[in-house]
View 1: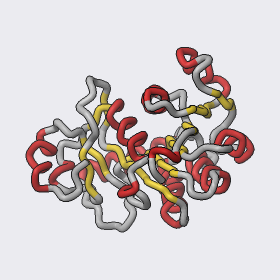
View 2: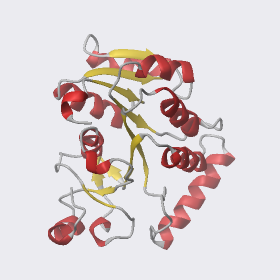
View 3: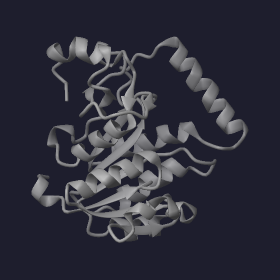
View 4: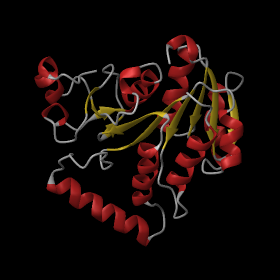
Length: 238
């Protein structure tokens, strides 16, 4: 799908930090924007009043998503493992079920998602993930495993999807479009750091980048030491 065919974009999870960056960047590109967020979070989108359409509701509610994605050529979805009611997988499934045929579907998640099992993680990353998963379940605030299930469903679909796997995020001045590789553990990703604004930039750019269709790029800031050291030789640089 070329740029001329993406006119209207739905951003699922628009009120979060990443979502708000995606709203700004989509508006800058001239897209008509529909934002989805929980009703309690609608005030976070006040700066965009009159410029976007807001559909309040749970993002894993199929009816909410059905209304929000109507007529959209692209859907940007933040997969957040909130609560213990399959929030991520419910959100992903609703988007897969209701987005129009041929729409570009771009999902966000973390490095812990693997598509083909060929990613290589440092021991401390794996240990930290296990601890975070256990604690989230213990206090019933999130289901990290459900993010894995959400991406499994996306990978199994025949839609025009991209799953963008983000490294550690921080705020800061934009460094431009992040670099990427198919597998965590590749040298270009070693710095493991991306500015949140640039993560959003990669998501929005993916809407019109056909080379990313049915890819799960792991990203890293383009001015980090590992990116600068390996961009020249990487065949998968942004």
